[in-house]
Length: 529
Ligand code: SF4
Image (tube, rainbow, N blue to C red):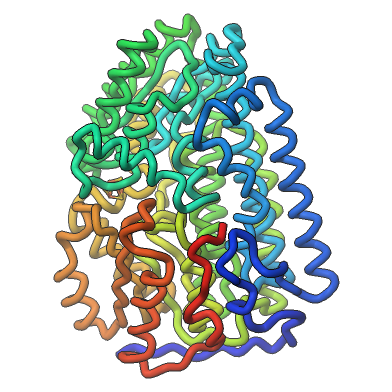
């Protein structure tokens, strides 16, 4: 089997060294993590900052009404505490990287909630604002909005499902029950199923002049989109465009068709909203996308060394927000990326680590349940296994055409179509064997990994079919492959402890290792935010 050198932390770790002792079955921890004076103070100021965001949203137009009208709203009161799951064991640069990235993600989601409630017919009812809003799909790149700086893209399912579930793992269970009572089978992926349940229960902000749905990510989201579109169109009179992204996105012959559909979608938005596509804005946005890709590859390069810096759930959530929710449209992201870059270089120079030792270098593959559990930082602190990168963060490595010339417009439509087809998650779960299986081994090689942690999402049919191939090929290559089951945002199927147990069992029985921090092996955190 392949082995890697163990890397030891040469810096004396300040403050707590055992983290399991912080949990006591309650919603909040027994106490906050002690990280030494400087880092505890820094962490505390960020905690206060997050509260200021919560208060700002609560004071915004329509928010109080929304708090009483929508079941998912109350989850956001947990934002400052929920952040703690992403900073376990972190000090110095890694702590600052996590806060810089995640605090910005929180700010971005807060803006989405504020906008949604402001225009919502049931809460803020700002009709003038609602008239410049286009509802977009949460599970998609927002490419079709890159040339409409005068409009607001409202990622409809972000406040109701996606980020609410990151705050509280049980936030979707009610909606899953609603969907199943409606007749949708229980083995559908809980992400689109919960989104459908929210629509069935009519528990979403109603705003916007039109909506765009995309068949990303899979048949599950296709099912959910049908139900959602029916309610939007028939009950609320919001016309909905179905943007069809071909599944075999690596096949060259699908690009022309996808580009034509993108063109139709943009023309449709122009017609419904009464505005014109702005090529200047598009090319500015695509330049930012290209710059983001270059920076992401630089972060990954640092992660391929013995001292990785920017990794774990926050790496993935930041990439999600940057590529999908933003897609180059906001000029605020580059400054944050630059700040992270500075910290990454500084952390690498200072050999900053999250745990006393790094024993294994791991690629995380499959669709991850970072909503209910923070497995990745747990792996580092409990077993010294470093998640160098994850499947959702391997979005694209292409650089797209940046020159604003009429002869480049056809290429630009193709680039938008390519980005749309290669949305995070579906660019690996669909597109064939090469992107899902072959690419994994390329990353293992490039990042000098000796282990793969394979998320087995029970309801994701796209991935379960390849189980045997992964097993055989890992054996041939001498790579340890650890299968860990979960059911994404339904924590009733696999609890946090059940998920951890699967990993620990492998580490004990196959690797014959003992945990770095034994207090983390069994933790009473089932109810914790
Ligand atoms: S996890 Fe799998 S089943 Fe669920 S939305 Fe993604 S691709 Fe579809």
